[in-house]
Length: 340
Image (cartoon, rainbow, N blue to C red; front, side):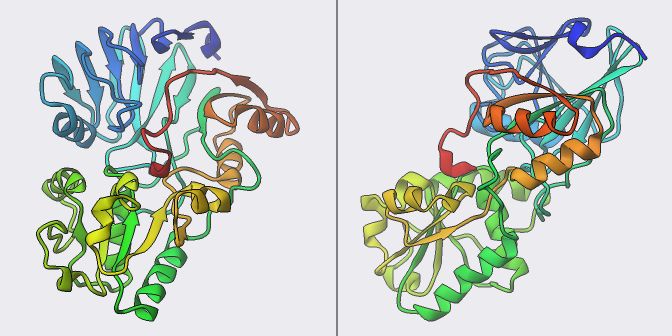
């Protein structure tokens, strides 16, 4: 057993720092060396000198912020590959959050720490599923770390959407969803459920869908909603950013049924306050049961908790003899909470 990860990993204002490796994981400001778990902009910031990530994450970062701002030097690390950085062995393991999302597994002098980034445990046709890895310290997110959050199977929620479409064939169903990850997952789930008609997109969602398609994801016909004739949208499904579904943009649609796909839709008051008629509890984060099951699965005697309901999760793991620590890294969380 080597030195405990608490002796070589530190929480600094810039983010989580691997001291012997000289790199940060998902730093909150520009640094010399960054390892990025996934391309959401609260984890992938611009301006780093050296960036290490999966091929897919780097492609999505370049599309979101431009090649230069995505990192002066960019290095892709494949699944299962091991990279030595100043005596630290670094591997990227699938996190199941969005396309290319990874956990960062670090081994130093015989001890191992795994930083989860954001993750989910439900199957997602657009990305590799989460792979648990035994470790001495597991750094986990806690977005939905309260017992009230238990996500239903995503396929069940898609069935609710399609049942509503069948019930109201004269109306347009507009679904609020985050541009990276949630949008493409919804499309893939709808295709799996047999919806082979065009799925119309708000313009803000098109760019990320194009990157997914370029990386081999088959999403089907995705015409722009803004140029479609109003009659073509009758009985159709339209995807749009969360901020657009209750906006003037949606008023041109045919008597829209406003839906929202997010883990936060479990909270009825949130759905009501946003004018959501059809809340869809589809999340790209682990729920309470999945967080706890994952912690038990990796077997880490110590768990560090970031961005979310840290206290509840720390209390729950303490009851099982696991040491918990709140990192309280400020600055993480979806750009729009509906992205969750």
